[in-house]
Image: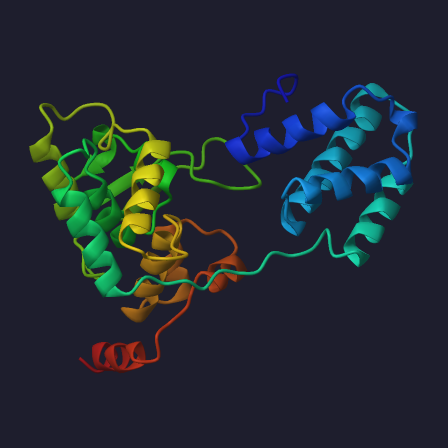
Length: 282
């Protein structure tokens, strides 16, 4: 990756490290079907799910393709393809179950209240939770946006380098800071500005992992089960649809390039149809 100048995320780095530790010392000719099947089984025993094992094999194929195309290494990907087929039939490679977990408003209220009232909490995680629902932004994006990219007059925010599987850098997007989800995104930024000594650098100058850890611990303390920080992005996206926005309009907020992907984040509550109908009739 360093050779081609590609910046990688934590999950990919973890997968590549696992591959390197298990297979890195082998010659390409030694990567036969049996050895690759064993690798997949070993990863599953370690706790890697079908999606993760599938990602591993995708990365292995990328490395082999790079070796053939760039370095002229003569090789066949047939052993890898056969191993993938075998692992699929064993249920060790496959699609992950799409999450449809949405927090109730009561759960959100309890989480935010507990975080805001926690004297040991130095990071305003409650405010970040509200902002996550209001903008449907990812955790790492929230902790990366800067004051220079916030325009209070137009209620717009520039999000730099948004996640895109096809491009790693330069995916900048201006998003509107709306007030349709129950939380006013622009007002939350103003609250954050009032709490800081100066408005420069990052708007939320905190470690994303620390934010996620605080959220997870608070959910555990409140006995709120199976709720992840990323579910707040799902919730924010769903609330945009419930406010009556179309897929094209929602994508202008969430940054999704593939509208099919956007559909899987949408879990509308049946009651919301009344609100949408009323909004369109107004």
